[in-house]
Image (cartoon, rainbow, N blue to C red; front, side):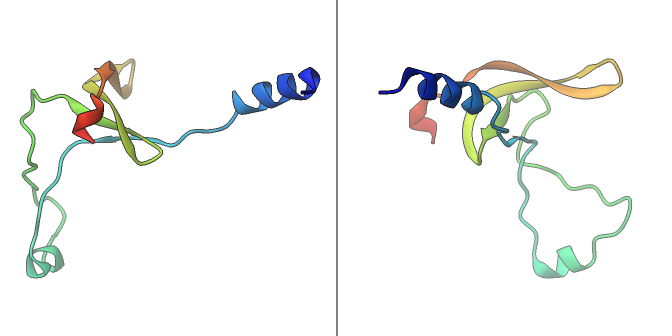
Length: 87
């Protein structure tokens, strides 16, 4: 195995962009309710305000996090990995 090639491969791999998303919760609506949504409507999600949030990596659940703020930005604090049996 060419060690120089392996080194370049590792360096490139560390620069690959990974898609991450945080799920606030879910809601089910009828098509009638969806069609009638308007500015100011409130959707009640299936999560309690104190529940940890699910962080997905490349579409797969990976971490649990708590919502927060960092300076003027919304942020999440990673609390730990999701146990494999949960996904």
